[in-house]
Image (cartoon, rainbow, N blue to C red; front, side, top):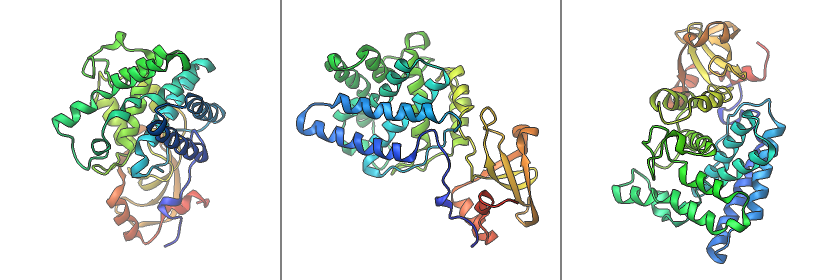
Amino acid sequence: MRGLPLNKVKMADVVQQATRENAIERMSATFSAVESSGQLDINELQKIADSIMYDVIDRPENLLQLTDIRLHDTYTFAHSVNVSIISAMIGRLLKLPKEELSLLTLGGLLHDLGKIKVASEILNKNGRLNDEEFSEIKHHPEEGARRIMEMADMLPHPEILARIAEEHHERLDGSGYPHNKKSNEIHSFSKVVAIADVYDALTSERSYKRPYTPSVTRNIMVNLSKGHFDESLIHLFFNNVAVYPVGTILKTIYGFGIVTKCEFGHTETPSICVFADNEGNMKDKPERIDLKDDGTRAIEMEVSGIELLHFIHKLTFNPMVYLTEEA
């Protein structure tokens, strides 16, 4: 089959892949050391946060399209790193001063610190949690805040970091936990980390669920979870997320096309290369179209998962070739 393998297409992201991989490894080592020493290496965590922050600052032209490189046993660390990356990206978009951006990035790394006390059997359970297990999980925000305040003399602005840990599951309409806080009671950094936390959780594969695509995740967070998140932040965020990442296959009013380009502020209307008609028959000459001219009405559906594999097999052609060839 001609074209690039589906899992080999690499896109520019808000951080370098090496930065993410290194951060995950260092997070894993840092938290493993806690079990033996009982101490958290704050200096190391700050270095990890700064490496993420400077990468995000240095790559302002790139949209968020995090590649999933996590393994089952490193999920918690990969999640914390991704939340830190997303939080840093939102902070950069908010034009936060460097000191505040550094604090927010560190807050993203530490937001799930309280999960140290949660049994690994619960964290990695293959299936839904029962009421007792979920009750234990719901204690982790307060536990994280408590642990942060225990290290207050070693941390910058520990009271803010503690609030991030304690409030990242709170929701603006009061439906969150642990204290059912409402909008004006929740710290602005906690509102940022809440968005980052949910986005990464929804787009991640776990033993008990398949990942949602960025477009489905956007629909859940913007339309199905109204009242949960700060509206200005959620729209700012998704204006800078590759809702349809490069390489995504879309069925449009023009036929089937592969996304070739995403732009800031137009992440729901990418540029595509249409290679097949609406019946799935290959076109003699592919056509490049900018969907900004039509708006979202041009997109009928995203082809993903098993459907995508069947579609590619039926074509006997991999449209990923249009990412490296001029049509």
